[in-house]
Amino acid sequence: MAQIDIQPKGNARDAMPCTEGDPVCDQPKLSVLVETDEIWIGVSRLQEFQRIPRTIEHDWPRLETLLRAHKQSALFAESPDIEIAGLSTSATPIAYQEVVSAMDIAVKSGFSRPGLTDPAGLSAQPSL
Image (cartoon, rainbow, N blue to C red):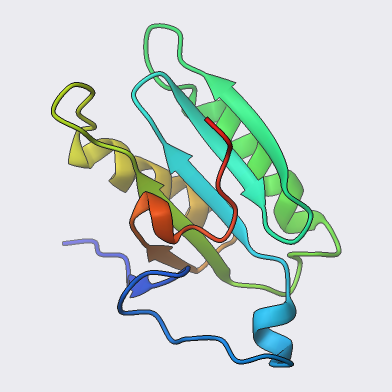
């Protein structure tokens, strides 16, 4: 049975807190937010976001293409970490498999330590 090693990431309750001047905390972080109608990729500190709208289903190949491009950039070439969250509400539920798919694609794209967080815990949050 396959598995992904998941650690708490972002500003989530169980993640390690950052201290001022900590070089690890000063590094930009890549965040993925899976919503019912779209997927957002955000870069903290720069507050840059890419939106992948949903058509019939989520555009997983597009997510992979964008994550691979980020992994090849100087900001994330050496980083195995990525933060992933799913925004699920009773009005707009997200299936658990959607979040798992995002984690699988992150690993496939070169981010070997995906971290699960709640949407409010993402280091880069799109303004909705």
